[in-house]
Image (cartoon, rainbow, N blue to C red; front, side, top):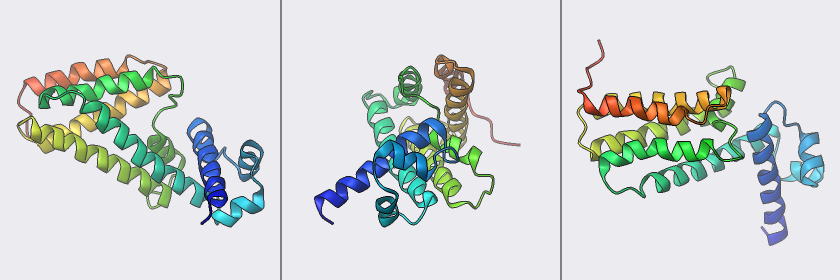
Length: 192
């Protein structure tokens, strides 16, 4: 693929990524993508079969970028237990950024009603990666019952993201962090 072709594909994905994250998949039509990107419909269909294929490529790229960013920022803190809490500090910074529009994967799962929809499966895969990361941090910190705690932390993370988006509450991560401290300070009971 030559540089011009590569640049065109990147432009399509970059524009689609911004539109999908800001407005959602359903609201991002090919017409809007053509108008916003300045790339012709013919060129878009040269690279992608349909809008779902574009959305899948956007979500897969966002998954890699977001997880890389989240892990890198969290791991700036060296103490294993502090890293668990740092996840919430990282979220607070994200919530206060001007380009925060919630979680692209929660948003996508909300748009796609069918659990077997390929876009929803990408969202599920992203959440599994986030759960695996929380589990790794819990194991490194020597937490009791790390698998249970990691699942609870995922609920706190996604709950904070949702509250920040829906309620416009950038303090949601701080509230979730307070709960995480409580969970870290007491034994985690096994599910009944």
